[in-house]
Length: 315
Figure 1 (cartoon, helix red, strand yellow):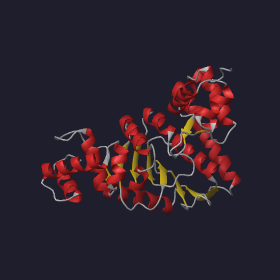
Figure 2 (tube, helix red, strand yellow):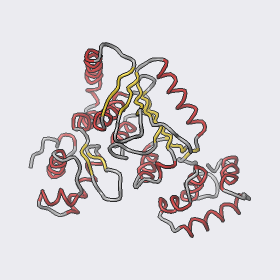
Figure 3 (cartoon, helix red, strand yellow):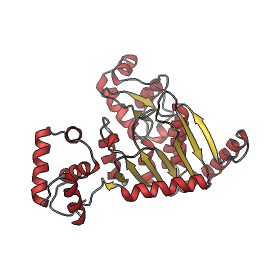
Figure 4 (cartoon, one colour):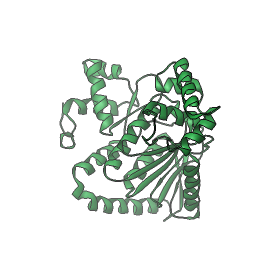
């Protein structure tokens, strides 16, 4: 085992798991355990720690499968946490990288097209790492690589503001709602908006990443730099944010956390079965609690309940 990553908080066994995963496109804890000749539980714990450090991401789907995050960016993020005094040097490196990119693409183009899932993932990481003030996103399925965003927790800890608008369909994907609730705990401001048709990410008001298609067989995205197009995307995001319903509901009022979340999901348009599944309830339990909410609010349906609860400041 090596300990080259010990300086950024990775122990030798976790580094061994990470190195094996780097050599694969994706793997389950059991597959990695076989290669490392150790228990699946030990590998699972190591993957959880690596996920918290932003070195691996969990892929979407019912099975537990993981993919390594590009070490060029993931390890750099850990270095930034451990060595804040290098920020000035890193800013210079980012400026040089932008000069290098503009030189390769004909100089200062406002729109750059990237192709493929890996390139899209690298740009999403880079966009977040270059953000100094805020990251704004519109999020909906499908997902080209992973539903998780391990870079966000590090950025939040460094004072970058995250505001995210999710489509209700995103909340139905395995693990997504749990990830959102965890990120809200770290400071993300989250809302949900039915009918969301596009995905995007905007860093400050300086750069945006916009997938051009939701067809995973043809992954293309536009990288937009300061221009009228970027201004239009910022305006569109702001309109979506104002129309969306909060997921990080305030704690005031007689509702507990589960009821507040359930009410937010009801208002978002999610079906009863999907809400029950995400909250770990039976559909019968979920509908019983919904009926109790309707009685408490004097509402005849979920939308009326949302309006009344919003007026009272409960969501």
